[in-house]
Image 1 (tube, rainbow, N blue to C red):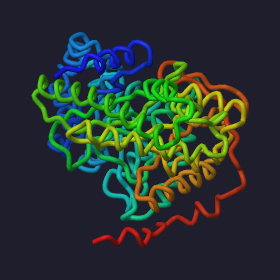
Image 2: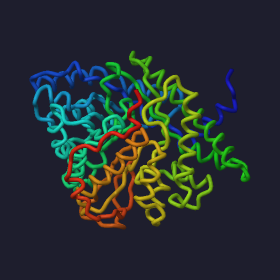
Image 3: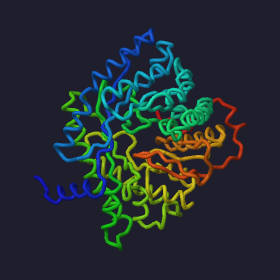
Length: 452
């Protein structure tokens, strides 16, 4: 039976609290496109993506009109391109250009999967792809890249970690005339999720169906508003219950959109990723939820505890609202994409060290953090290693997406615009870790990996 109150609440969430479907992402397998001839492989990839996704944007637009639910992004993820590079021995940049052309042809804003999974070592195609990342992201508009350098089962591949620190700096340098945007499209993972619909880290896992629809919901503004309306003497158990109930409603909307999109497109419905994904819009902020819970400003002592409670409540509320929850699912803390995080970083309340502590309990990791342009690659590699260690030991996904702001120093601002927002250049310790990073090899998997 329809509940009029719930309907009105949802309308208010959409109209006043920035509630939306952040992304409908179509995953497309490229395994049947592998070919010893690189040009032929690119032809197959372009044909399959454009055939499978030709109706993705029109179908999402029709669902928006039917239900009045904003669907902000329509995206595609593909099997890690390192497989195609390894099979053909071709130029990875040619594959990136093919992805970019296909994404433009079907009208999506991003395509993820210029990726490699190297947590235990380099296979055919992996090294070539990693070395090509800076150029590939510089010459394309829609392509996103990710590399998984560690896992709880495999440990941390430090040779790959060293290479990714260098790749991030070089990518920023090659796109310095465009606010270093290339680095904003590059993520380094530990325990990467193979059904993640969010960019820049989305790729289509090899165990996924040939084609699938995954949905990422949002809703930090709706959660903040619900907490704001709670009684002022409500204790934290009651606040957690309020967050759970709100997350349930948000996720039900994602389930509805995902199931309908999959049905109209004739492909399986995969998962709802119930992460709270903020935007630079005032009010649409994870940081503001934490402050509504009771912190004077995000970054204060208590921030990690409040975020842990929020993350847990979102998962508990959302998991009952969907037939299949997956992806990352929790709360994102991207500095440049969250108005409250921007304010806290600008005032000095939020530091990289505090953000690193928060990543132990959030959805992903160090996300959209702007560093001084002269940050040494070894420092970035060491930061990646730290973050991967948190993910490895805690059996969770962690990631690093940092942007060295070429030519800028601490306190300057880098402007991306749109959902990527803007942010202050943050201070990072530059005490030299280069000897540690240069040792290479692999940090062994922790004892908790032995679960069989």
